[in-house]
Length: 355
Length: 136
Image (cartoon, rainbow over all chains, first blue to last red; front, side, top):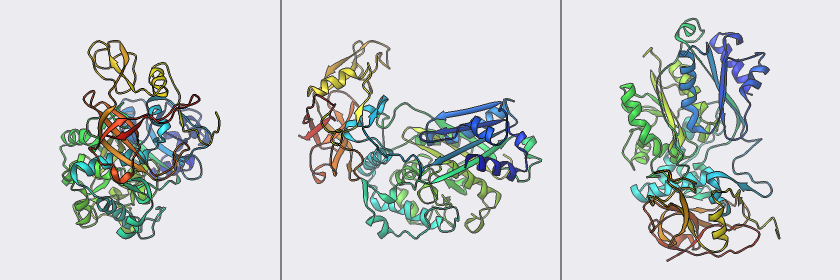
């Protein structure tokens, strides 16, 4: 899948495989390594091959780093890809035989508290305590994304989801129901990053990286001051200051949504609304077509599927090219793409026009 | 081990964490603290992350407040049947001294802000238990 996605990205750009001399990826579960993917594509070597061990917190950073590698003259073009057998292969939370946990997470092992939905639910509960956010607020996020996904042939889940369906969903780790959790899929995404000079001769109009801001922390799941807020409250103000843009400038926002609450905390952190206001923001139509900003027009990780957040960058590129078909956001010119959870993550701003 | 089915997931005990686990198996809750500046360490560390001073494990009161909690309703691992309450507790012993643990109470009795007391239940020579609290 990784090789297929990379080949399609190169073909889409109108380049040859030899134009690509750098590749990078990230993983917490299964993966295909850059040198292996390059070899399978028929490339004998890469000038830069990087594989980082971590999750969604790295997605924006990977693309920013690829851009920096090109600007530094280390590579002509870099492919950032993510490929995983998230459904048929390694599933987070699957347990076979006696289980042992090392490092900072060892302290929760005997409690059976060891998978992401449990951590994110813990932060969501704190948010409910501080701001009075509700199950229905989380449900607004899940149902809005599902509605968007109905127009996306790539989406894994396209059947309608009502608020009643959401509320009737089985509990996973209360306050999370099954519909608060992403859909695990097998899939791959490849994003090709290149220089302005190369892009000028490509088949497709380029999508421009305007700004990227990231924050990576060793606070793990419980040690940053306020767990009701995530990395976005740190990254958001930096990103807007750096870019000179504001949330109101965004036409599209592809918000990392491993869980519904991730969207809630990061929409607040990036300044789309006040703490506790996300449920109303979605309920009043401000997060969909005709509103302030279309959030996850592809249905997000919740409904399109979990390709570890790199599918959000693919969707942003489609929207900014005007190539999103029946789910096209009209006149989309700027997109925010976020990824991460806890105190670690980042976001990129992409533009249709040269910044 | 008597039965692998009943054994909860286990820590890979390392030199930094060993005193914590040995005390817990003995029914005592200890936490890592700087011997020089007094800072509580978030995770056991050989040197203080604030001042680089030497650290040691010291007993804590085990009294605190529920900072947040979840009700685990999907069985994930052996060792405990669902539903059960897993909380992040802020101990009275220090500012933001957060200890995760199981709350031995009915889910409906538990709220953010509930006072709790460390209360070891499981003793087993062959494996390490979770941190457990009762409502105070």
